Length: 146
Image: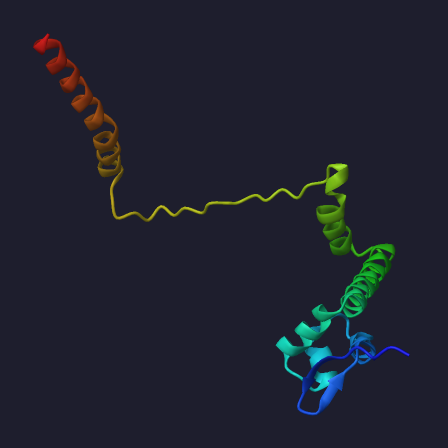
């Protein structure tokens, strides 16, 4: 009979992959929950999960189960006519059918300004006309040098 494979030690504790898999079951894929069941830190639990293919597969399976439960609840909400659930589904999974969520941004302005209309016009002219004048002068100088 072959030797049992163990995952690292914590003090005198040794964790077999089966013990880690049992801690994963019913955790919803939440590493903090797994760590509490094993009596170890979050980082240690994460290392234990990743150490063996069987524990990593159990973790991935647990994550899939919780996603299935969430999908089931979403399906129930949609069947009841929950429009926010319908909208969420269309905005996420419905994208492949061409459904997209448009975001419209409104810009609110106020009539309160520290500048008068004339001052604003002058500022705009300064930024648009001044560069044009400099460009014309530079062109004239090049022509005069020739």
